[in-house]
Length: 154
Image 1 (tube, rainbow, N blue to C red):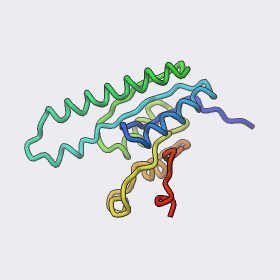
Image 2: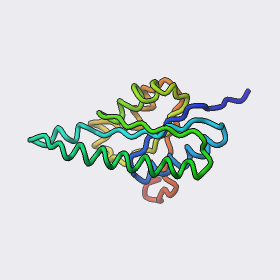
Image 3: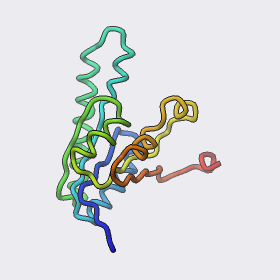
């Protein structure tokens, strides 16, 4: 029995690990003739730390997200992906991707990069990929960066 993925959400934030996840998502989407949903969540928790809420921060974050996803969409289409959608949302990335974005698009696969958070940060807030893996109702592929150094493997 073979299983084909038809609706793939890939979480991108501009990081190296997200770039690796994006490349893997293109391969899987092309092999399955699947729709690729490029998702970016503007982390509004970052704005909560600014004493006087500065609207320009949100505007810059939204502009960055739009430019990032537009660039990724162009790369995906140039790589042969026929169906590409963009989804920009607001809130906590680890919550929004698993609980809102993936169900909204009826995703059967979420692809995300392994995070670079240190052990202390993971202890207190948990990694995005860990949270997605725990709460997603579909398959999740966590992609590690292409180059893992000897130091990181220890």
